[in-house]
Length: 435
Image 1 (cartoon, helix red, strand yellow):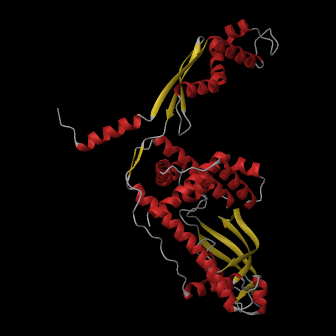
Image 2 (image 1 turned 90 degrees about the vertical axis):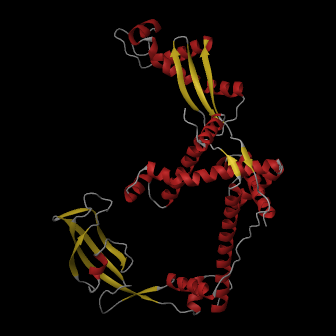
Image 3 (image 1 turned 90 degrees about the horizontal axis):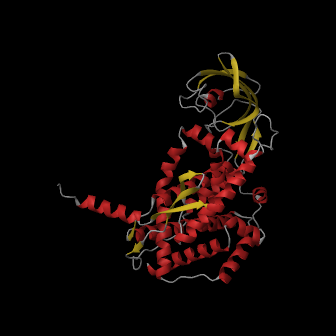
């Protein structure tokens, strides 16, 4: 027999360790409980059952079973006792699941139903080193160049558009246009607009469109020959040549603002009425943002370094559940931008499976850090009292201008507030222990 390699031995150890966290609990529901579940299932079915010679809802039980079979009641009966079976599984096993348990139907007949619950419990976590790593945050500096760059953005933001009385469209101008697109002489959906303000050079339209508008004058009409990109989202237009009929209604030219009284009035920043004061505010804003970025990076670096000293076999179910959570968060972010997931998949030529693969690395790190912090929290005996959690809930509710009860409902309850505070305390301790 071939000798087992070190890698194969280690893999088997990991598999065995992983299986210790996965438990199968079989629960059988029978007797009177099952009989009542079948009765309940029949009452439900009876309401819609159609049998010749009987009015709807009046079919006797024996006639129903002869006509449809006893088996037709089993699934509904099983569904009605599933929650009780789950509760029983938790009580009997005394296990604490870390993800929603999976359930399979092991057996089902007129005598009862058997469920198999797959319960994944928290894996063993060993943190070999989490002190004395000597990690320092980066120093925050703001240069004059950064301040001037942001000042330029502000001036750009408050730029005024002045109607161009003479001349033609140039790069940087805003052309107010009517347009309509035709493919093979027929107008296509989504290809028409009126009085659309198009900034030339913004690349917001398909390649070739803005370039052909350059040189047009107010009132001028022109046909633009355009070919859609091969990877365009609308498949019927992808790679196809089309004609856009365009009319320029108005040309607007950007007028750069000066740091004068009118500008500071439009800016509306209290106490800011000079270039010097504005630069001070800009520096404060950049400093605050940089400090937040540096702090987040500092925490990430500490977690990454501590994680290198952690031994844990994370069940794939925990990672999968975290991937689903991240997917929902991503969907919410897209909705805020007015984009559905289906539209996102269409634009990126991807699928949900592709997106889940992209999220796996982040999901794994999230689970690893959570388990790691929980273990350090236990080692350091970090606790948050009920009073602390209640106070935090009140402050957060006030911050978000919500009633406390409504805030707790959305956040997940006082236990989640307590857990969140414990995690934050643990991270703060790690910062102190690793300076």
